[in-house]
Image (cartoon, rainbow, N blue to C red; front, side, top):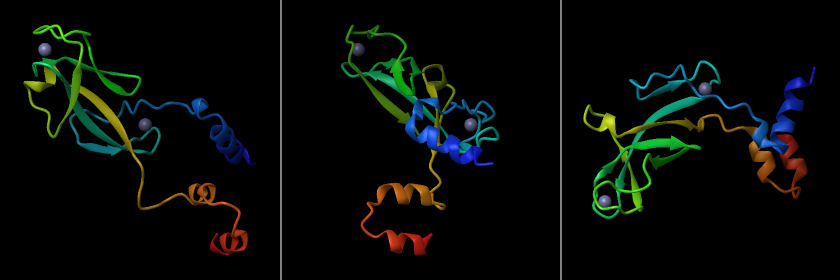
Length: 132
Ligand SMILES: [Zn+2]
Ligand SMILES: [Zn+2]
C-alpha cells in the first residue's frame, strides 16, 4: 500500500491537516528528549515575558506556539509593550512567571532526501536520479 506516500503528499499540499502532537510525555523536568508519540526530538525551553518599559516580569503563556504575557498591560507602569526572555535554566522563582515551550528540533544528522529534492529545480534531473 502507498498509504504513507499519499498521506505525505496530502500533508505537503495541506500542512494544516498534519495532526499536532503536544508531546505530553516529555516531562518539564528534563532538558529534552525524543517524544514517544511522534518521534521528534523535543527541547524544553522556558521563557518569561518582561515589560519593555520598566522591565517588570510578566506572567508568560504559550498562545498559538508563541510566548505572550498573560495580561495585556504591565501591572507596574501600564505599558502594553513586552519583550520575551529565554531562560537557560528554570528556577523556583521564575517558574511562577515562566511558560514552557516544547520546541521541535529538526534532525540535522539525517536530512530528508525529499526535502533536498523539493528545493532543487529540474535543471539536473539525471544527476539527482543517480544520487537517489
Ligand atoms: Zn510528540
Ligand atoms: Zn512596566
